[in-house]
Length: 585
Image (cartoon, rainbow, N blue to C red):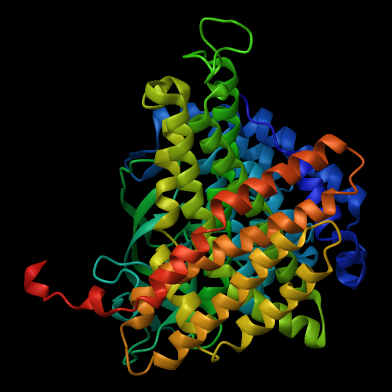
């Protein structure tokens, strides 16, 4: 298996050259005190070493060994515990965490790039830290001061881990039907009883405690509340006490992510503490869920980068056939990189990957502005985060699987067997389209809530701002500018059509949402490619500039037209989708 290496030049270019992170941070006092570009570069350089030398070596062995459930213990693959200890001691779990509780306070613009490196190196391992960071974010946003003080330092340090417990056997994405109960006690705590399924990192041997955020219902209430439930009770002095009625029923045996413990969790009168207000649990949980949705999109992005590196190296080494028109060297067989179809696949993967990275950094920038900004800057960023979160989760993870499958195709027969390692990427990333809300649910959220929910107001504002940036590009020709600008207008036209008909055609949004999100995603990638090509024109490395321009040209010619296809699908409506009688399926 080829070693992983982070695309540091591209990452630094996006932060500084494309999105001007130093200026963003300088305008936000809380970040200006803690980070500048030199700090960011140092962190990325170290993250590259951690991903390459520490995390990636356990990727293959972890997949082969998997997680074991022995008695009341969940045991991670050999090497996971030692690597996790070093990872946690380096402060990586709390990279973007609150400094008041031991976090490093780094911006999300930087955090998404560090996350990408870790996911590229090993999807399964990286999930443990991601869940912990998300749980800490939720506790910090909605927990009481006492809960923050008692739990956040140990979560940010990696001493304890976090987990998100929502799904039940009879209640998948429709959480209204959950049965887990929370009974209030005289001391202000609650006793939690019920079972949850598909709980990523629900239990393991990496940390001495696992802190569960559990959705449950109060007595005589149809509302859903959120509770913090530790696996092991925490005494008043902060030391761990007795076990807490939290146990593992079983672990799931999955097609991929075999080093990640996906558990059935049982709660038997487990002591828990309310987070936020009663019956407002989903509002609180969505803080963590949206964090994880972006993280899972970045999982797809990390897979794309790893797949590209493996396939590109293989295509330069593997000889088979000769170039069309004859071998340029006179050899009896050429590297398969000379073949048009192999180049097509590699260019597809690379274009999707680099534009996806731009989308992740942009989304991180908006998260930083929404968290640390003030006034209209903060409010506008929050609107843009609402738009971008479902897109980042769905589009990045969809393209991540596409990239893994195309890379596997580059390998040919060798991509189907274990030795090359590419088939693991296909298996590992397939789940990204499903968990944290299927990508269909993300699309419905994007079109139904974020686009038509405010009668296309936020999307119009977003498009107007991006159109202005497009117009101001100095090194992009009118043909490319017009190609993106005209499709922005077409997107808004179709969005208004959906909005005008959403009440009289109740199935329209559900039937059209995936195509609408895919149209938006492909269009934004086109915009990002022009932005990157424009900014790269003045890059001191002319080869870097030329590469970005050629990739932008490829995207505009070969992939941007997908916008037209997906908008046509949306415009065709829902009649043929809904016409067939259920009995005929």
